[in-house]
Amino acid sequence: MNVLRFTDLVAQGKVAGQRVFIRADLNVPQDDAGNITEDTRVRASIPCIRQALDAGAAVMVTSHLGRPTEGQFKPEDSLAPVARRMGELLGRGVPLVADWVDGVQVAPGQVVLLENCRLNKGEKKNDEALSRKLAALTDIYVNDAFGTAHRAEATTYGIAQFAKIACAGPLLAAEIDAITQALAHPRRPLVAIVAGSKVSTKLTILESLAAKVDQLIVGGGIANTFMLASGLPIGKSLAEPDLQDQAKAVIEAMRARGAAVPIPVDVVTAKTFAADASATVKEANAVVEDDLILDIGPKTAEMLAAQLREAGTIVWNGPVGVFEFDAFSKGTEAIARAIADSSAFSIAGGGDTLAAIAKYGIEDQVGYISTGGGAFLEVLEGKTLPAFEILEKRAAG
Image (cartoon, rainbow, N blue to C red):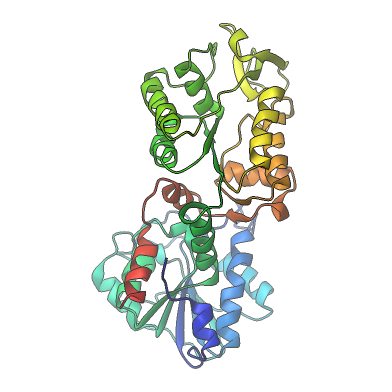
């Protein structure tokens, strides 16, 4: 993917004295008092901001926060807590600027945070008049917000159309590189793990990956539907019986290419969905009517772990069991440990996946952890993200 990179502009000395507008993803969780409870996204935004400041740019940063109503400011929609945290991380004051669309005062070597961009009328609909106003504020537009790359909004797409220069920040560039390495030019075998409660929410992802990967590991409620499609009993487990034909089609598409969807050979069951439920390991064909399948069994876990240890590239989205309950976490832990031990390039994304990575402490052993959520899933579906598309167009002239 050919895009202009902010890091290259800095290295070429093209940033000094320029007005740099950075679209970051600072959509952080807060408690009822407005305190930031998890600041990963703010910390992740700092390298790009520092790069711009060190290069002598006049720096403007903005982001969305929550789901505000356009044109109607409420205190809980304010980026004020983010400005405070950003100031602590940068070791300098970061003024918060409201009503900034018609002009921003910022000098080279200074940084300001522009109030929640989704308060601007026309942001969500990528209004052209708003986009042109935003583009007039800047000499260099930098998109460093992969989490919003799947949305065509004024600060993610429209401004990039009309700014003098539009480029990818280091976070966005890293996502592009990781995705390219995993899906466009993978080292084989390419193994994908797609897990979740429903086939319907990830059917297009499964169909897209079935044309690319060498092994497609399914987990959670998705695996239950695939087990049904393979003629196995699943008791009262979460599944979508009406999607068995689609599951069979994915299995056949893989088989036609000499690839496979490994179906569990054993499972961990319980009678109730609870943290203190009694866990029973059963052969996959021995599940009875009142059983709930809540994890893969030890034989299945070892079979899958062996495949992952031999992989060249691994794409991971979703835990394979109810890993929040310790009795049903062993399958996901086995998968996580196998990914950590593998020499494969691995890319992982999705909220539950990140929680599993954190639980088992393997952050440093995963090749790339994507914080993109919906954007990551759309990439797996084979979609071209709007933010990537416009930056490619601009790079091509």
